[in-house]
Length: 184
Image 1 (spheres, one colour):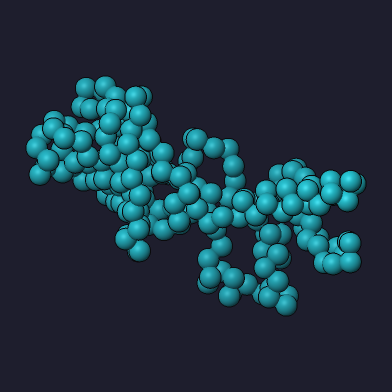
Image 2 (image 1 turned 60 degrees about the vertical axis):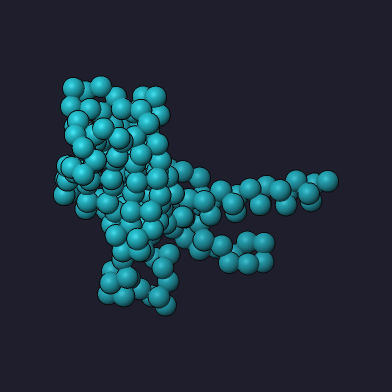
């Protein structure tokens, strides 16, 4: 019985830490008309410009939408609803753990008319207080890493207070404390 409890606890710890490492982000926001009224039922489509992967959502009764678990990359968001001009915004960069907020204001018009905005969403994420960092390939290749150990990159990341290796239960283990959290 005790052995079963230990196995279940270890499985839960492994799956919870693996979920935090997914290279995805979220695009969320709201849709309003020119007078500031919310627009429910609008179709919001996010397209990754590098892979042409797209995902759509429909705004709820409060005019809000969320496209979660999108792969990192450069995105274009298109908002459409019959009787209104399409709204398009490009230059939305999703990074690991970053939420991009894209609020759209649509105007009355025909479907063939489009309002385009070019630019990234704000860098300040008001939907989450989490801290994340994306390390690019060039940064990894140009850093003087001992034995090419990627865990040494954690030591130069903000919020990391402890990053050490240990040997427990007969195998190697990496212990990392981020922003005062428990060991990861």
